Image (cartoon, rainbow, N blue to C red):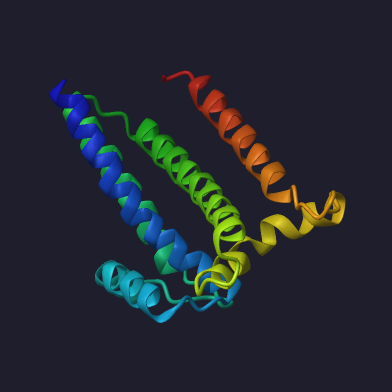
Length: 182
């Protein structure tokens, strides 16, 4: 029971922090500037880890690799804490679990952005955060919008994207469960 509580806390804290790091990376990939309050919060929460990494790994081709590496390090630390609790140590398994966690965080982050866009479209499409969320979702939704035209004025591309991301997550879970050391 104590192990479950500790892993829940580790997963929650590291997941939220890594989410901010991944959002920071994705914002720079998309060249989207968030509203001031959100930008200030994201940078204040993550600068302490991103800036030292950036001294070693500078940005390249407009990508903030330090933010992505920081998210990977957070996932690695979370896995090491869990492994330490289990008193098992397999370096290759820890690396694979870290990669798995990063991929899951990316998929969950994209799903959350799609859900936020759907909520904004229903509640207040002109909210200050709506254009920011829409711009972050554009690379995921634009290929689907070319394939799926609006039906009766309704855009079903976010729903299709959510289904695709869920399928990718299921495939990811099955693939990692099939690895021999699990």
